[in-house]
Amino acid sequence: MSARYKHLDLATLEVFVAVAEERSMSAGASRLGMTQSAVSQSMRQLEEQLGAVLFDRKRRPLQMTAAAVLLLNKSKALLAESAQIRSQVLEANLGISPQVTIGLVDSFAATCGPTFIKRLLDKTLRLAVRTGLTPFQGEQLMAREFDIVVTTDACEWLEGKVDRCLFSESFILLTSKSIKTTRYSREAMHKLAASTPFIRFNSQSHLGAQVETLLRRLGVKAPLRLEVDTADTLVAMVAAGLGWAITTPSCLVQGMQHASMVRVGMLDNIHAGRSIYLVGRDGEHGKLFDESYDAAVHAVRETLLPALERVAPGTEKLIVMGEGSTAFGVRPDRV
Image (cartoon, rainbow, N blue to C red; front, side, top):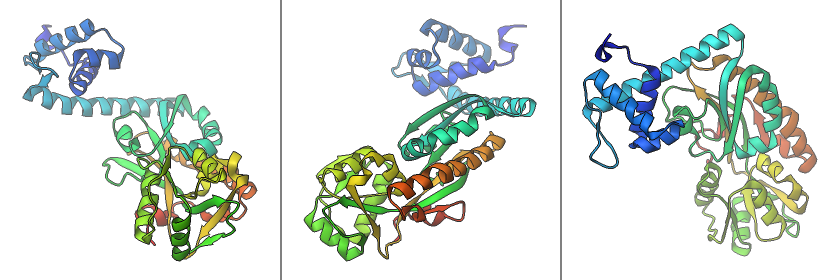
């Protein structure tokens, strides 16, 4: 059979997708762990097989032809379907999922991660865990870098996803022990902001953006002086007397080594907080998705809630479990 009439090979299409997305033979090779010469040869053979030029090699970065744009869309759909079939066959045959990558938002990973992952280890052949901030987890899920994510963003804008709310938590206010107030109305927050520096959480994070929105809606003017990028650093800075902050109960547990040196304040008549979601791709890893939900809820009940009772009694009541807890899902800054 001549090259022109051979069936397209999925491995070759995977190479093509890498080159097309990277717009570079060398970058595509690096992404796949191949040599550049092997990638170039594969693309030449694909062009010969299709009878069409796919790239304008005289331009940098590589420019795709109209044929390549069509092939890219078809190839990505075909590769996704292939991965889904493999996953479903293995799950049906073995009762467990094959290689799975789970993304966890930092605060969940630090507080509930070990308990959560322990319950999933015997549900997969190989499990990879990645942690970090929320903003890019939705894109990474759809790009197949993640199979399931625990995130503060329900990813409402994503097509082809499935989500379940794990829990919601109200915001809390942290100050140094020298400040005696434990309940904060809108007016009390205005007075605090006027007398004490505000410590911001990473403005690039979902939580940081939610807190900024809350401050604007309350009309609280808090000049930008100090910003930190981890929850434990935030608690440490407040404990050191450098200012006050708004955070969540789970983030307080993340910084629990400093929690005894801060005073926890509740928001009075201010409805504000965030929700934590489990998000996956619709039609994939269905059984594992349900098992992940159960494992996550178990981890919150067995790890996070008892920790809050020890660290800051009363704050465990600010955690509302399950899918009826989506008060903060769409408008976390509602006041």
